[in-house]
Length: 340
Image 1 (cartoon, rainbow, N blue to C red):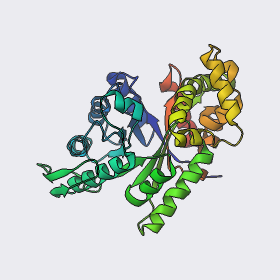
Image 2 (image 1 turned 60 degrees about the horizontal axis):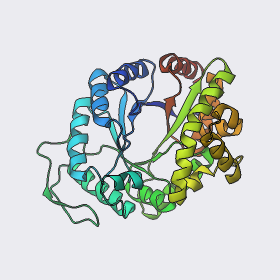
Image 3 (image 1 turned 30 degrees about the vertical axis):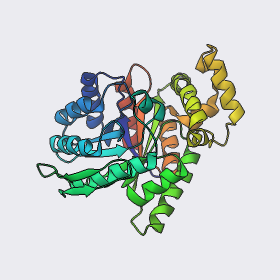
């Protein structure tokens, strides 16, 4: 039987920071590897909840996925993430990505040249965490004789990169310590993405990044039908927004359509019906659940998680669907412990 990836929990900006603390404690008590905090434009910032969870826990990893250099300069990233890692006593990982261009532009900022932006951010940030004085003139972001005023606790903190397009995946292989893969990316996409990243690393004559962190919605219940209904609701809420993104970002559409069992016509029809007011549970069939979620009984979910591991995912970050995340987290963790 294939090995399981590490299982972690995503705590979104929709969750109050105090509730994040409670969930992080439950995740730690049940053996989850990390809690991850996305930071989407105009939602709750990631740092308050991440800091509170770092202070309230002792062993679980703390992940930020992702910071966007357009609205947070790389020198500020270094200041904040080093301080968070100090609070967490060395448990932090950081993901960097260029974000959603439409949101960045609503701030009055240009989202041009996203690969150059991420390259500059990782270069400046990594040097600052090492305690170096950085004198770097980047294509988009620069640092002129900048150095942290105190020693960062971990000069080798893992810096991961969110990527989806071929060029971005290649840059992750050449520069980052790992890859972050978004929601709504099926395992078929993961397999191809990991191969692209690994080949780029080999061509750059550097160690292949070991970490592949993937976000995916999760619905686990003793009643498989109940779990699938929850998963369809979560997928339905994301499908239209990712389809709209794909109209502007070809790599987002290509990733969405890598699921072998679902055609472009299937996705377009499902989006049209949900936008017209139909419920996702009646529109989406089990092919969508299989492609874009971890759902069913705990045994179903672990089998699906192993499929992602076979595709190259080292860590699966689960967004637990529904209003009862705590018992679902415990149910899945108990099954993972029993079955190894």
